[in-house]
Length: 141
Image (cartoon, rainbow, N blue to C red):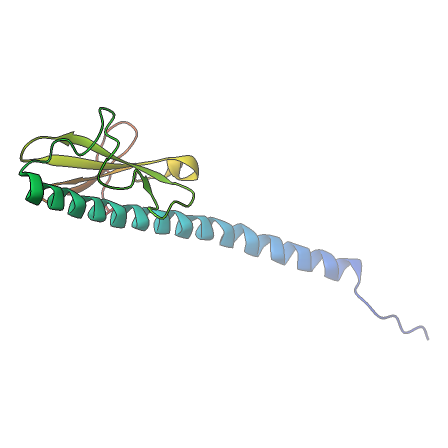
């Protein structure tokens, strides 16, 4: 009798099929987790930005002059993450006056297709998210 060692083609094909099915299930879940963690970082950056706005107000008694004409902040980082790594959100002052402001975190790069779209935060602490058409998206904060 011949005693063969190794795998048959059928066993190998079944293993490849199982790995393919597991990958098809795991990869979208992984991508969703990555997107959620980037969004959480943008939320933290918006809150840090709001703290910088409040410090500026304490010193100057106004929220004006905290950004250039395009809304790029002059008192805080312009992108999230704020550590200077690959940016996934642009931080902007959408509107500011003597007594009010609205901050935005707009997704860019790989995050641009995020279901939550642009995250917003106002001086009252009101939080929101707007999709690409400007409609409110629930459950993003």
